[in-house]
Image 1 (cartoon, rainbow, N blue to C red):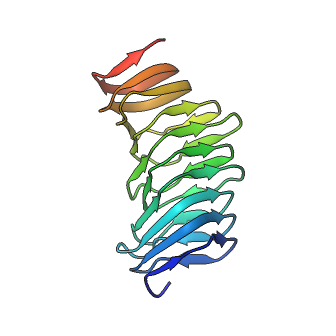
Image 2: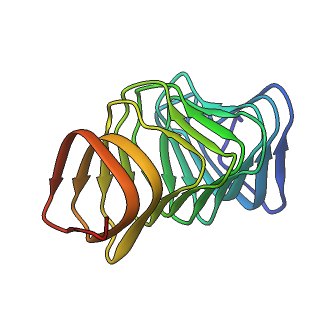
Length: 193
């Protein structure tokens, strides 16, 4: 992209690279990526997306710009990746396909996170995550050794999860089979298991 602009419809990326440059790109409709790359090519670049559906391709860049998702991040199928970027998802993240985080650069802040049956969450690098909502796993959850900060208020953890390190700064009820392998820092994690 060569300038700041707003797309009042949907954005579909099937191949190639759609780069932010140093500009703000706003998409008021749905954004879907089935191939190619949504690229934060400049640290000043910002993608403001209403929703994001990933079935392939990647969200990554040569610089750590921002990708802001106002409502939902969904991975209904396929095996997309998220790399270098500052990712903020205000709404819910739902994974039925396979989502891989593969770069240590950039913050990752999410609302509710649900890994559905048959879905896979995988961090192949040591990357911290901040989750402001509920955390639920019915699929495969590979956390790596990054710290997961749970920052929501009156939220729940459910399913079967093994996470290396958790810090709870919000308040969570643990309805999960939760294994913390290295470190748990919390005064606000209530466990029913």
